[in-house]
Length: 324
Image (tube, rainbow, N blue to C red):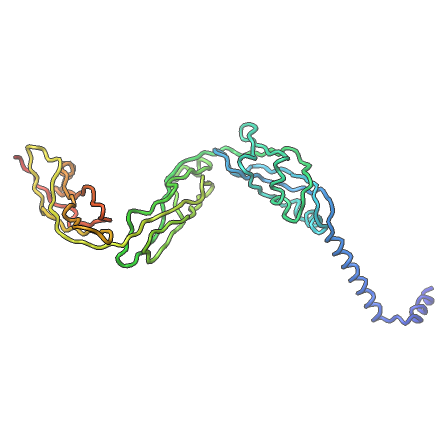
């Protein structure tokens, strides 16, 4: 029989090279057939593990458990094989809207099957069409956490063009945020910081949005804040200003050494008049009562509207009090 088969192949003119070509052709045909069939769409039940994420006051934003979600899907054969190999074991974190997650009791919340369609692309991918969900209501546990409200401290470094300066300080909105987490994680936190903000050569107002530096094992009520800073061109005015006194008892007299200070004002440009004439600088007798050195700070009343800021030299003066 073997000799007969050999004689038959010889009569047909088959050689070793012909066998290689035949096998290659068969392999190519099989590959085309396989790719074609895998690219076709099929209906199949697919199951994925899901962890819920949702912002719930007083609770962790991530569920402590996962739920198996099963759905009848229509997708390619390639996706079905891929899902069977790795997709069914990879946990998906699904961010549910607060109105979708309903409270059952204590730390237990649930999501109904009718609400899952909106999140099908997160669970199964954009190239999978979910025909219907086989899973019923999903129950998730969001552990209770404590919370604390702390101020936001901006971290920034600014420089200005010549004859420009800031008007007031950088402000942030909101100026405080609520932190959620375990008591041990929040016990020593009294403030949070923005990410570093750096600007150079400023000559106009700035505003924008900046993120907050993360805090280990805690989440924020908001992850970013708005910031704003007013910047103005200024002109510098210098001059001596006579000091006055306040709250001195009627039976006392207070002498100031020196009685005048050098004031350096930064004023909005342009400005009208001489703001030095209306600048109210004084020493408070109550400061003298509290001091042990006899030196008191120079204080200022309401600054003229045109004045952005002021520096005084000296800032502390000697005070001598005598009976009248």
